Length: 447
Image 1 (cartoon, rainbow, N blue to C red):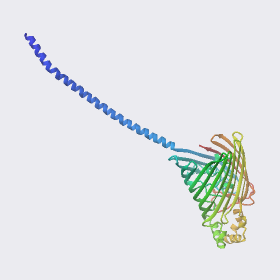
Image 2 (image 1 turned 90 degrees about the vertical axis):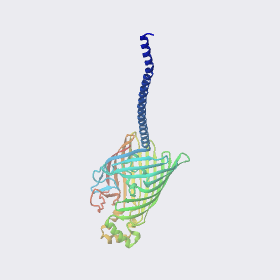
Image 3 (image 1 turned 30 degrees about the horizontal axis):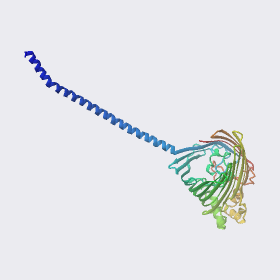
């Protein structure tokens, strides 16, 4: 073997020993690189998992918010208008009607109602209302829990609307009736607008395509009247019969009231009257017995509207008992509907106040001051004629223009009150003129 051949063989042997070692190092480096890549990919996967979890949580939150939004139903109504009583005295018409100034407040109302559906059979209903302008505070007019026992029976517990009248459930929703405001002759004698308690409501279908509604209410209310405060317990019943466009509504009940006369003169007179005979007080301080009855009829087609109610209100003592009714006839011509209403209101216990004992007691208590105005103050009588025209601006807006004539008062105060804009709260005003006009314009909207 030559020398060169030996060298070559030596190097060949060295390379044979070194090459496997070099290949192992390269392989280890590749393994380390792959490990680092796997660790990075695992970190990326962990980040993506976290992002996916956060996304799922957001989706769940959005779903829950959407479900909550679907459970809350909103609606409301608004009335905005102006009215004026054409009288020289500082008086207003009814408990909350317009006065002798240009009145932008009496017919201005805004309300928002929320219905929160807890389950298929349980819901909470709340209605917040502001009367007398947008600067007035919102009050909880309704707030009750409603439980649907079955498809025909439900129970309402909380602050509800007493069923005194045919329009009680929507008496402030001007869009739902033809007038600017319901006839005061029927709707003003009972001052309680809301009460706390329980209302059991039933509805069912009868024979011959008839539909029936009924309610039993046990309620308690504190309310402020014109001359007194009331703490009233109410037991009331309601029944409505519906057949096509015709509705017959029957309502009635009894109340027991504890009262406080706001006027010091009235309180003094009350004490003197009770000293003569406890049965001839202006109004008993405790357990005053009150009864009411109401019969309503509604007939409505695409063209014709007929509305009528008759009501009585009887209260123990000298405080006025009343009987009243109205009849409304309306005729639609496309978007226009003219309507005419006749209403009557009178006190039914005038003979009690003509008792010689009462006249003597009034004179002894006041030196003749109350005696002179007693008949005009408590005895009430009036007729009214209302002519109005409505224009349906769109499906949820009605514009109304109305003129009402109050007449046949026979020297009584009728349903006029001292205007609340005056500071003379103890003064009773009986308007001198027998015929008094009330004008009004309003826009009613539901949403």
